[in-house]
Length: 432
Image 1 (spheres, rainbow, N blue to C red):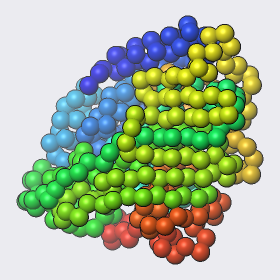
Image 2: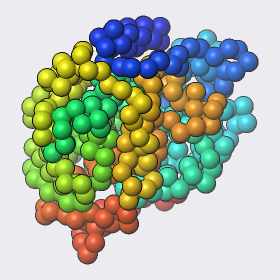
Image 3: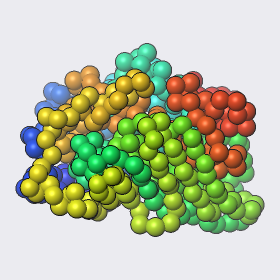
């Protein structure tokens, strides 16, 4: 895993290269500069395996990790030892968020815990950085949005591609008409993992399996349900549609500048008992209110292809290509042309807004905590983006095209689809 300093240097290097190439006009904000000691916030980290550990180490540039929490004893103790501030450690996140000496909470748990932990942390007076995807269901997103609004807390979702210069450049170019009028978008996410049947085994003594399951149905322990591979079970996640989709569909929708109104999809599902149950093969097609269409595939070159009336742009984590990109050397983007990006008013066109290049997604969060501003990966934007991911999965499940009302956030007259807006939650772990 790269160190925070290595990550910082890579961000600086890539952003500097973009400026040198003439791709950006305007100043770069020093959002990755560590805070002075009297400004440093006290941070509690929940879920310390894999990405949870990554974001906790990044947060150390801005705050002190004073508490860690994980339902796996081994992970918890390793995390405690990893931070020089000798943080307190907890098995239950409720014991962490109620502490008055915690200012900020990081959430790096599996997806099915995100919404409840955000809601509980906000109501406990904490600002929150949560890994993507924001929610397990669309109805959870409505609750999270309402609670964030009522509490006034700052919440950043870890859809860090919004802070990457390639993806931001691609969205800016679409908004400025560098490919003419946007007509279609193609997104490739990659295949879902196939596997099983897996054996039921005794729960490891170091793991609180009941607490790990949270709102989901209580099932016998299977090792592959837990830790990283949870994402291939619909009980806990949504497969590639919400894993990579929470990144790529977010960028695509940012550029499309509208909301989907019609979705059709196809999928094949495995029939192996006690095995991964996400779609083996899938495709989803969206029509947006402004007429743009989007196709989401599981096969092809991972990334996003924007097609307009006069050109095309392809962007992924390694590149941004196309003749309109080459033309930027003689005709760079002009930030003064940007409008205001408004997620809350569905009747008014929304554009990216006058935004300087963000060097560090975590730095943007801590800057917004101090300034009490909305971060680049806001709850409203991420609720809408991950809802689009959920819409694709719902269309696959019901097996027929669905109509979506983005204002009421329902499927008019479609009981089968509306039933999938939420899920039954295990008693004692309800979200809300």
